[in-house]
Image 1 (tube, rainbow, N blue to C red):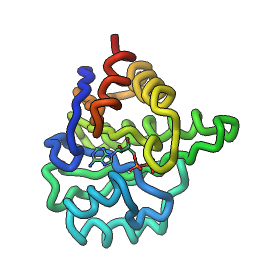
Image 2: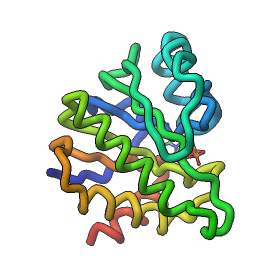
Image 3: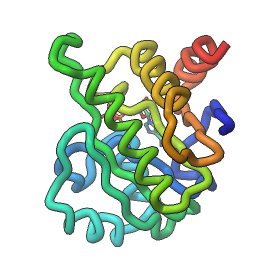
Image 4: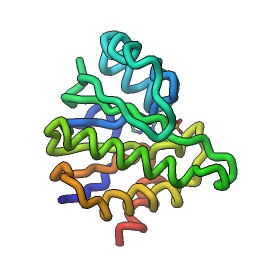
Length: 164
Ligand code: ADP
């Protein structure tokens, strides 16, 4: 398994699956969620409606519609409430459940944004540590390539520092 760290807009990536840091309604929002819905087109919202939402830490898969990616995996990350409300376990569950869905759908590559580190305020270094650790310790079938897609140069630094 190859781990790649890139700085990009995740909607432009050609991975088999891109992960959406959704909210539990799965009906779209701001940040990366809004960008993915805009780029995928209105069919994505129609596909998401059928789930009737998704609990934090779980994941759901849809086609990518107008995206280059074949699939979008939607996972609501935890809102940061200081770290004593199960945030780390929930964030890890987001990565695990996304990896599991990608493998079950034959994805050879999957791209993750920095789940929960935007409006959900999860501290960036701690979140990146969980992301990298969960992928590295994964023992079930994995996509061949896991891409961590950083939106900002600062986020890129955080991941590159941890990958060393
Ligand atoms: P959350 O609600 O899970 O915190 P946000 O979308 O607010 O989700 O932020 C999650 C991360 O996604 C942040 O690091 C933010 O900078 C990043 N992000 C926002 N837009 C994009 C995009 N188009 N591609 C990749 N990452 C993005």
